Length: 184
View 1 (cartoon, rainbow, N blue to C red):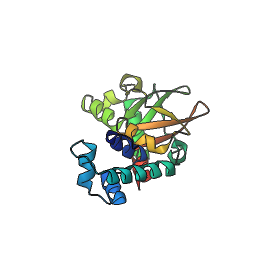
View 2 (cartoon, rainbow, N blue to C red):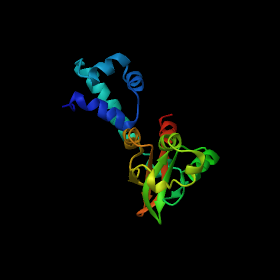
View 3 (cartoon, one colour):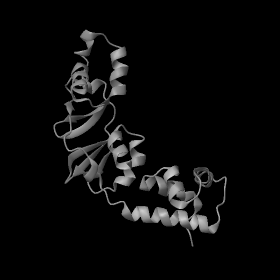
View 4 (cartoon, rainbow, N blue to C red):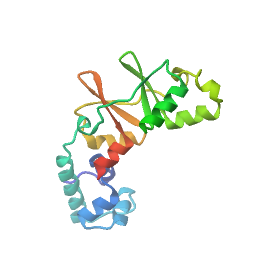
């Protein structure tokens, strides 16, 4: 007996492949995969079986863990740093998000989006006075080092970055660009 058809999209996203890739691996069109996932089409038993076999094989091969793909060098700021500090740090390191720490605890994140919002609302002199604590976004998600990398794809859609912990300490960071590299 096969799993339900409505689990195809979830399984596809879990293993981190596109509809196009699944279509080429199963010998059906991308349009057919789209229609099956949206419930507009009922595939033949043979087609459904082939799709689930491919997804099952890919799930078994997905052995990368969060710790394998994360960047271990984490650029960070403190809640006492200023908006100006965050801008300079992003410019010099060419990154688009910075986790905010208070002692060894992650308390938030500053992203390009949050910086732009505050830059537009302040002048140059105010930027040195605005503290990160007053403008940071909520803490990004933290996953365990051994979390399957394929499960991070849906999480990164809702967060600018994901932190990786090992032995209850922040070990690394995963950004959207890291997940794109994984997809290649």
